[in-house]
View 1 (cartoon, rainbow over the protein chains, first blue to last red):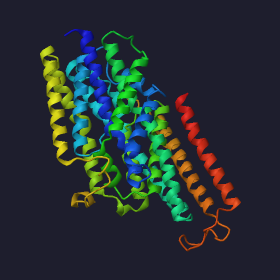
View 2 (cartoon, chains in turn yellow, cyan):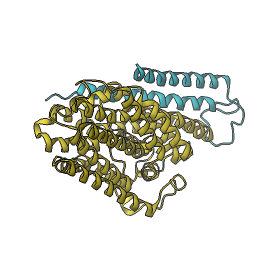
View 3 (cartoon, chains in turn yellow, purple):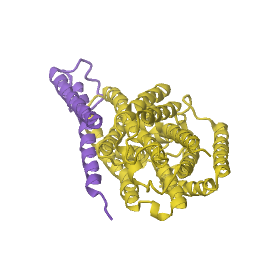
View 4 (cartoon, chains in turn blue, purple):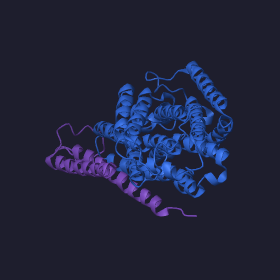
Length: 375
Length: 82
């Protein structure tokens, strides 16, 4: 297969991943605002989409970090990156189907690591960088976000109890409009860069870009548009989970959760540390729920989410490794991987149509199951 | 093995300070707006009092809190853009 043609295929696959990243992560910014009624569902996803697009242009610090350090760029090729992206996309779709807010970043990292391992051996992976920039922040960021959100919510509830209830409710709802917008902007600055990093890595490994180059403008534009479109589509299943199945979120809690998430993500983006926005936001929402009343949180749901998180990196790595092994056999292998990926994705979509969740029923939640509330 | 603890700690500390400050400033702003000429702030909420507009002091407190919160958010955005 011609190298340039294959680079186009990889770039398109990266943009599809970016699209799934967008609709998978709409919930991060907008779930609590939709749940409290601060924003109407359709308006919320439109606003989030626009701000994700704007955020994509604000910084490329994380994009440089990903393409420069995670794997050895001299030992991998676009086929490996393609295989890694397939693993990440399939894991994103699987967790979306189950309404679980797993990390798109970790799916991407896992897919790339698995594919690179098969193609270049263990030496092609910079384990120190993976530990320092991916695994450690993944373990710490949701905990840190949850602890901050608990403290912030606890104090905000105490202070605002002296305000008139109606005024406080309206005020925090307006605050949520700002905080969720800020969070959507932060998401754009952080997550769109991951796809920029992958595309840049593809261009570098195929010799179309010099090593160490920053993402070209067209890469920034395409990544921004793809994540914005995905965000606008709205991952309603995950919005329902984070907005209604974690805890009954009040406006003050939603505002505290969103502000905490925005603060963590903007700070980490500024310092060039790629954090999972999903883990930060999920940690903040659980923290905000616990800051109101510990027993109000559905800890069974927390357990299921943490289980999904722990499987994200290895599951995407296994799929990425298998795809890499198959794709390395030649053009036929690449086509088989692509067709298999499309077939699985179509199957997940068809299955999801049996129980449609959309803007009109996203806040209609059936009573919690025993598994939801079990501690 | 090099673990960048300094960056991780910096993210946690700065984010905690920013989030706590912004949320509490908004909460104090709402308390300020709740100050009514006929209602002492310690009176339980929903007691029926407080139908008038906020006092001048309440409006000033609220304005200062909102201004400060806005400046913090703006500074955060400035850091990202630059």
